[in-house]
Image (cartoon, rainbow, N blue to C red; front, side):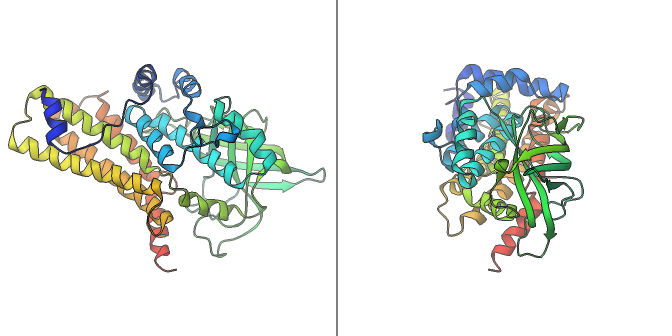
Length: 383
């Protein structure tokens, strides 16, 4: 039996994430991750592979050509992809999020118009909620939608940290449609805000990939400028001024960014297994104890993310938030422990572990940020 096999069997029953995805696709994602770390740009080949993989259909109901997957399936697929390419996993997660919002809040016409294309890979979706000065809770939006006499809406403003900017075909954009009421009872979003579905080929939507990130370098995370971007009222998602209700429902779904962290944690653990196997240190008591500790942490991440997806707790929304908190913090911890374990072997430019460390940090900063997650969890105890 190989050293790596002994580690996997004796140092904790850590589940294997893959491969349920096609090996050539996994290889493509793995190569793309290394390439994007250098270029800081999304890889067209990886995105084409994603569109052709069938994965984009996961969260779309079967009646619209999708796989009809629930939150367990969504989290599992995101985790698998994140094990080899966290940047693409983030793009995929945001696509799933938009699919779910359309399925939950869209009109029959909107579902028929968008969901089949989102399932087939023809259309890749992105969320564009954040903007400078709005705060993590999106309470102070400056971007606006103005109602025009001809029955259209004109959107203006600047959005930031949009994952999939410039590569998405459809953007779920959050803007202000009337005076905002920060004290309207919502802790995330505000009354007077609305969502619009904006096509990527709209001349008034201008992506900007000048943002140079430390982690998630292949995620096409950048700015989106709305410059007299005109849409119809049929492109508005959910009731006017009630974006906060849409946002509140997101965490109830069970789909969690913690799945990305779970994939990152698994990848870091696998690096540790490979390192121990290479040095033949699996029988050393200290090394065995280190691997037991890592595998226990990793199993806790998998378990928390799985529980969020099952929505089996008394408060599924709170569990979804806690899953992101635990998974992201623990993934960072695992990455740092593996860094210490590898020593100088990992202290090399281009070593994959350094990419994983940066990617793990990024998840904690993604919306809802970990600080906002803590506030939302604490608020749930008050009700």
